[in-house]
Every structure is written in C-alpha cells, then in structure tokens.
Length: 177
Image 1: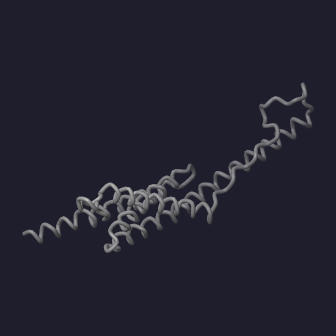
Image 2: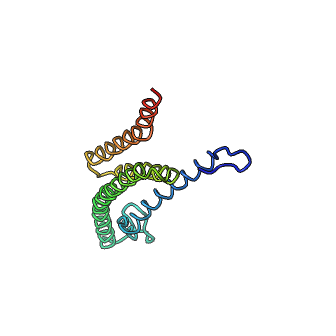
C-alpha cells in the first residue's frame, strides 16, 4: 500500500483505483482472449431482396418471386443454424470464462504476500464471473447451464466473503480473546 510522504497515511484511494484497474484489465483480457482465440459465429448475410420488400420493377415475374422466396428460405435456415451455433459458442465460452474466473479467484486468495495485486486479481476474477454469467444468457443455452454458471458464481462469492472477510475477522477475534 502506498503512503503519502507528508503524513505517512495510507493512500487508500490510489490502492482502490489500482485494484479496480487490475480487476478490469483481468476481465478484459479474459473476454478479449476468448474473442480472439474462440470467435463467435457470424450472423448470416441478408438476401438481396427479402420477401415483403418492394422490388424495383413494378410487377415481378413469377421466377423472380420464386427466387426471392428461395433466398428468404435459405436465409431463414442460415439464421436458425446461426442461433444454434451461437448458443453452443456462448455455452462453451461461458464455461471457459467461469473456469478462468474461479482459477483467478483461487490464485488471488492464495497470493497473500501481494495484497494490492491479489485484491486486483480478486476483482478481476469476480468481474470475469459476471462476464461468464452474461455469456450464458444467450437464447438457446440450456437453462441448466445458466443455473450452473450462476451457482458457481454464488459459491465463488460466498467463498470470497468467507476467506477475505469472515476468516480474518475470526482470527483477529481469537487473537484478542
């Protein structure tokens, strides 16, 4: 923890800002890392003239209408495939982000000699956990996966509260007794 040279008082504001910055950078690294090494599927391209959109000619031929209907049907099928692929991608990315979040939190709880960095990593792990939960909200992701992700997040939050707040308080109370 840094101190003011004039008063020797801990500079809490700077410590909080550094921890917050480290936490945000950890979460961004995980998020952008997943995006870079496991990119999401691309949304299909729209047909040239979707059904229901006016066509430049005043009365389209039967062949043109059939062609447009065929394009629209293909687009609808591609969209359905995209939604399935996107749900699978989000499920997998959520799993990876959850795993990384838990590992980061565990490391931050073990790295007690580096208090400021450990606090930043702890925040980063918790921010990453929030990110992993939002990844599981994509339509098509199984509700059990969403529940499991939130359950792991809850267990992580309770563990952090115990190891960072309750356990040190119990140790301090025992020492003073």
